[in-house]
Structures are given as C-alpha cells and as structure tokens.
Image (tube, rainbow, N blue to C red; front, top):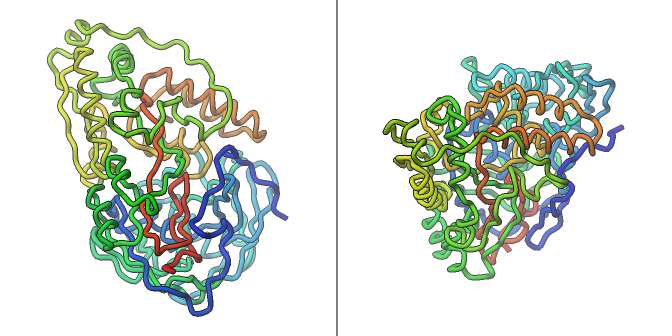
Length: 498
C-alpha cells in the first residue's frame, strides 16, 4: 500500500494545462495533428545526461521517468513504481509496474538497481543525492527495496527527480556516461541529438500509459530569448519557453501564458574568494536592492524577494539574526585593495545581464570595483562549479530537484553540497539542514526548513533579489501544454496540435 507522501509545497497552485486536465490519459489511437516544434532556452551541457542540468529536458519532453513523479500538489505519485511502503526509518519497498524501455527491453527491479547504482557512483553526483546515499536491491522482478544511510522521510519525493530517471541497460557506458537516446521509458523516444542545436523525439507506441496524441517533437535550442520570441511570432515554433519579460507584451495575448513560479533570482557570493570576509558580504547585501528590479528589468513579472523561497514554501519566516556588520565604502576599498570583483551572469535568461548591470551599479556605490563576465550558461558552468567568480547573478528553481526544499538547501549550501556555488562551509548551516532532513512530521519539517533558510541568510552568502513569474509562449494551435511552476514538465501524452 502507498502511504500518504510527505509534501511541503501544498500551497502551490495546481499545474494548469491548456485545454486539458492534470491527469494524463491515453492518447487517441492514431494521434492527431502534426509534430510539435519546441524552442528551449538552455542547450545541453552533457549530451542530455540525467546527471547534469540536462535532466529537466528529459522530463519536459516526457522522455524519461523515475519510480515516482510529482503530483500537482507537490506530493509523490506513482510512475514506474505503482506503490510503495516504508518498512522502517531507512527502508522502503517499491512495487513496480510492467513497462518497456525504448529499445524494447523490459523494465525490471534490476533496471532500478542499475540506474540508482550508476547515479550514486557518478563522477559528478546529481544534486538530489547531495545529502543521502541510496542502495537498491531487487527482491524479485517486480519488487525493489531501497535503503538510505540516514532516515529520509521524503524518499518518494526524491525519487521523482529528473536526475534519477531509469534507463535501459545499454544507456550506461563503462566510463560512467549515460545516454538517454532510445533508452528511456516515456511516451516519447529520443531518436537524434545534434550537438547543442537540435533533437528529435518520436512517439513511443509501447508506452505503458498509452499512446501520445502528438506523433513527435522537434526541438531547437535557442539561447537568445528575443530570438525564441521571434520564432514563435513567425510561426517557426509552436512552443517557446522562457519568453523574456521585455518581449512578453509584444506577443499576441492568446499566445502569452504567465505561470506562477518557484524560481528565485539571487546574488550568490563566493565565500572562498574575495567574499571570504563576512563584512564584505554584509556590505554587498546592504547595497543590493532587488525591489528596484521588479518594474525596471522584469516589467512587473516578478515580486520582491521574500527569502530564498518566497511563497513557494508556506509558513512564517524565522528572523535572521547575528549577521556581520557591513563594511563602509571606505572599508570596502581598503579591504579589497583595488581587487576587481568578478560578477558573472548568463544570457539564457534574458533578464539576468540586465540585473547584473543594476547590481554592478549598486555594488560600485558600496565601494567595490566590478567587472562583468556574461556568457551562455553552458560556457560558464565548469567555471562556476570551480569557484571561478566572486559573485553570480543566479536564477534557481528552488524546488526543481525533488519538490522538497531540503534537497535544494543541501545541494546549494551544505559544505558537501554538489551545487554549492557559494562554496559555503558553515557548521550551523549544515546542522540546520541535517535537522530538517531527518524530520518526519510535515509541520515540524517546514519549521526546520525555515530555520535552515535563516541560517543560510545569516551568512550573507546569498542575497535574494526577486521571485520570478515565468512567461511561456504557446501557439493557439497547440493544446495540452503543462504550465508547471516547477519547470520540469511541458509536454505529455495530451499535448498536440489541434
């Protein structure tokens, strides 16, 4: 029997669909309409590896699946697992459904063991595994037992992460790479990937959930937001994600769809570099004003930041105390000794370079000397992970990896976090995150998440700026697109051209 899963995002609105309902039914027997043409914003970093940011592409296109999926209310719902039971604090048993991989092989418990084993051993560990170690054991062909090294009350949510998709055996190469091309289980099967430019996916007729209504998907990656909007206006694509706010009002209102988001834009400070000095971090925090961005840069498609999460996580915020005193402008100049602050931003979200321009002016008024480095994200990710910048204007979907805020906190701010761009190593932060991670009770877990958020903010390693509202561009000839606040779903069984 499947117990009621723990969810911490019940305040999120249901994911709306265009002329469709949340629960996907089987596609019409012969499909309808033509292939869907989709423009995505961030080109593949690692050839669509699930262990990179590319994982969300696999979920947006309904190519890959995990044991569970996220429901509209933020709880875990069945996917490749039909049900699950928690045996004790560290042991869960999952009953699997009958399904096939895109290469025709059968999905079994051994498939789960292989997939989770490779994820745990990946050279770059998926963010979702930052704070837990999973071990899977096949009990029989249709049953798998998963144990965790520490109690993990939200394991079903964790397994819904796009990074923990299950692939056919041939997907896993001896060198540790994973290829999702023709190896997933979703209603669409990737048939071709052309570098960082294009991909094609065809309908998979043996999908366990029924046939998709669209015969296939043709994907083009267009990093420039204005170019994505122009492609939609010109009729060159049917769906264009992440329309820049400056372009949104230029679209036909019938094609412009505003989506409440769990995306927060922040200024992340490298605590192992120039900002190792906490008084300099405090000076940056005191200088930067995100409210100035709402109308000027985002054209109203954002709200002033309310901590790391904003309205995505309900509950009363814990007061942030014990922050360092901010250095004065003269002290900043003395402490930095003429060193230039390297401020990074990336172009895939068109607003971020503009945000960086405003932030630069604010930091310079506080006494910093600032130089911007603005590139396309895939060109700078390795530098970011290596700590190659002093500060970063960063746009983060805080509930992307699991739907549980603890996983985000652990990956981005724990000392062992695999996406700790701030290079933060703070015992109080680590302890607060660990306490939240081990809490079973939903209400208490939420309170502990708020305490961990306060501990992170106390360090001034991150300065929240705004909570974005996402604008998706969708042609009027398309129906059934999933407008997902977590930005991990876009096309499913029911998405089609009319």
